[in-house]
Image 1 (cartoon, rainbow, N blue to C red):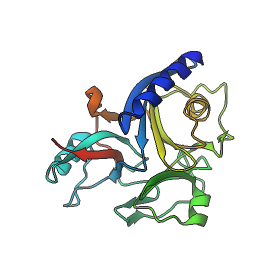
Image 2 (cartoon, rainbow, N blue to C red):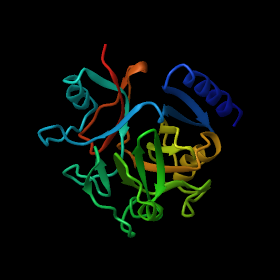
Image 3 (cartoon, helix red, strand yellow):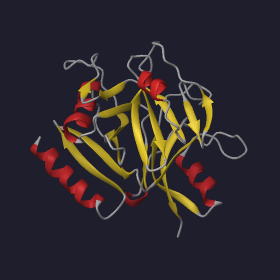
Image 4 (cartoon, rainbow, N blue to C red):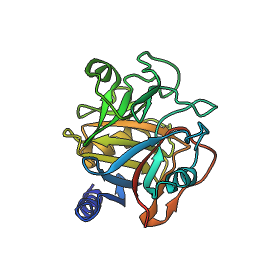
Length: 245
């Protein structure tokens, strides 16, 4: 725990100098990469298809698409579960246009392990909502992606997480602060359980609400640290956009 707190202090110190900062962190002997985004000021977006409607699928393809506007990715990761054709399993909004409705009911797999949630990007903030709360509040999201399960709900771990679980994967997700100014993205560098991953967001990253994006296929892009994980095509991708030099 002490090691995690020391490393996190370095993350927070560095965040004062850069709106997007990625650092390594160890918590309970599990290694993670943490990227903190200033959601109030950064250009945080979701990506699925290009202007022609073709799947982007890779960080390199997103960079190619952004290049025509003299932009590029500073950071990115996969952002929600998808079908074989890479279409989102749940709710998806891009540039204010809903492409997939909210799925409120339980179902098979991790997505249907209720409560699940929605990551919503609005002007000046980003928030993780539990799905039914999202439906009730109906926030006007410029971008939104639904995934599941929730990792942390109002400061509490998902009730179905087991301390002694044997289900371990590389996992990634996002947590947000109450005021929506902080969006903290994490990917495990070791195989972790849901309980271990949720505890990271609750106990170390101090995000009262956090959402699981995916496991096993989890990937990250971090320009400053020359990281660009590769593999088969992804569905929704979340990223911070910056001006290209």
